[in-house]
Length: 251
Image (cartoon, rainbow, N blue to C red; front, side):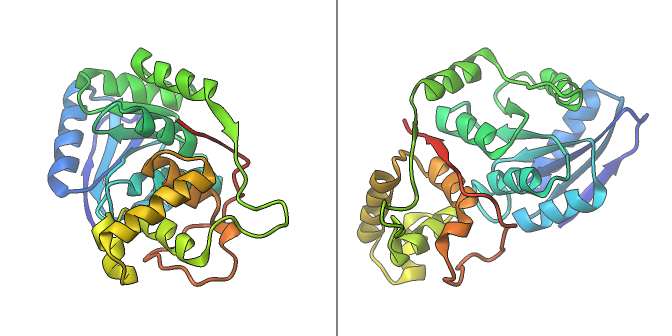
């Protein structure tokens, strides 16, 4: 893990986590340029390293990229872990775009604010301050995405009426690897399946769970870890146990 400190007049202690050293340096430098009243720590690492760093440093606000060293959706796992751990560290998620699935996924995971890299960077300090004050930060475009999703909310179950799991053991394996950020080809190699077969598994999983995107599937995996029974996890890092989700939106 790489880390740098920026010592400035204390107001709000902020930790920035991203996938690469260059991106963390760039974000920290830009943030300090627009606001000199933040105490900033920036570091690059995997989801497990980022969570451990946040647990140890206890910042006032965590700014977490959706993509970390161990996957392009690994940041969702960290945000969810913060929520489940009761550390009371509010988080802002850095997204590469305001795509609806990413926006909804970030708030579903527990983020208190969203900042898209395409937005004017001088709004990020304001976002951090508002989240630190206990408010929610979201743009009009992102809010519209949330409203569309709320309208389409519908319940889904992870068990059949007879108590049996909806997903087969192999489908559960696929879900775990998707949650790690693996692409279909990588999942195929890990499970000795063709890429086409993996794609069919994912479509079947979407249909069973009432989901429509990989982001929603990652959130399902994070919220429903306890539903997988005693099968050994294929994940490289284990996340804290979390309650099974009762509701999830579907597009």
